[in-house]
Structures are given as structure tokens and as C-alpha cells.
Amino acid sequence: MNCSIIQTSLDWCEGTPEPAGIRRVCYYTAFSNIVAAPKLPTDSNGRPTAAVLVGAFSMKEDAVFHKIVFLPEKSTFTSESQGEYPSITQLDKLTLVHPGVGPEAVQAMASINNTKNCFIFQDRKGRWRVVGHPDYDDMKNTVAQDLGQGSAGSTSTTISVEAPNLVSAPFFNGTIPTDEGDVELSSDLVKSPAKP
Image (cartoon, rainbow, N blue to C red; front, side):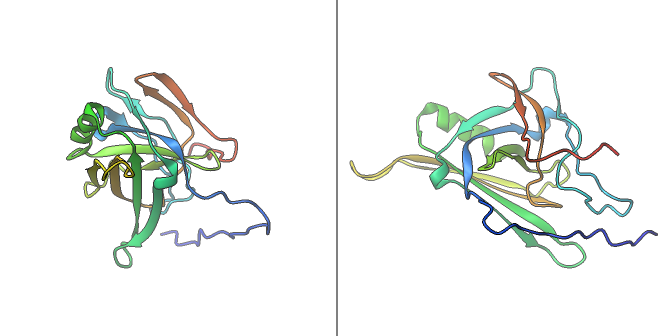
């Protein structure tokens, strides 16, 4: 068995801007629409050797990703460790606050609840990240609606996602089919590793 250490250094140049938050568009689809998903590169022991997914999304015929436009100032992504050694994983938590509460939002709620979904969002540096893993069945999506209070209130449809993964929301570069046509999700700041 190869038990070599795969750790690397983690540096940071003082003064480098690290913009907080996420951008205003997310794409999602049910995992049942995905025939094959890109994977994390791993060593022979199953340890991730990079945080960028390798491969492409292969979809069922006529299946696509759908777009959610949300309020970035009210939406968040966090990730934390869960479980016990040696079975610790990451629990990704994505919260998207959409301002609408009409029929379209209610219909989206019905299709997100009780469905295992894959979500792809963008951080403030333009890097696309994936929440959801086809091999974990214990992911959870919940949706809440708020019609607000009086003329000073605000309406919202809030989508909350909790999904385990080996790493925190891995990065993705590639093309996905959407109901508006193919969309190229890529960033010059993240390079995909060479295919194994």
C-alpha cells in the first residue's frame, strides 16, 4: 500500500484581494438527469489529489441545467467538516435567496424539494464550483417562501442546500447544456488537472 503524504503548502501574498460572497447566477439539475458527472482526481487510496473536477457532464437526452437568479448580498456558501475520523467529509451549505414569490418560484420549489440536485455557482473571482455529489444520498434541499410584511418588507424564495463531498465545493471548468443553450463555465484562475 502506498501511504505517501500528499499534503502541499498553502501560501498567501499579503495584500492580495479576496472578494467575499458569490455571484448572482446558479445552475441546477436533478442528478437523475445526469448520466455521468465529472470526478475529482484521486490517488490509489481514494484521497483527492486536486480540487478541480476532471471530465464533463453527460446528460440524458433533452435534459438540461436550469438557471436561478438570486440576490448575492443575501445568499451564502459555507463548508464545514462533518463525521468522525477516518470518515470525515465536508458538508457544503448553499443558500440562494430569489426575490420572486410567483407561480414560477412555486413551481421551482416543487421540483427542488424531494429531489437530489446538482448546483453550480460562481464565486466572486469568477470560479465555478459544484455542490452535490452523485455518490452521497444524504444531501438535502429545502425551500422557504416569505411574502414579507407591509410596504417596508421584502419577498423571497429561499433555497437551502446541504450536501456532503470529499472536498469543499470542487471547482469545474466546462460546458453545460441549459434551457437557454450551451453555457461555457470556465475561469482563467483555475486550471483543470491533466486527465489521469
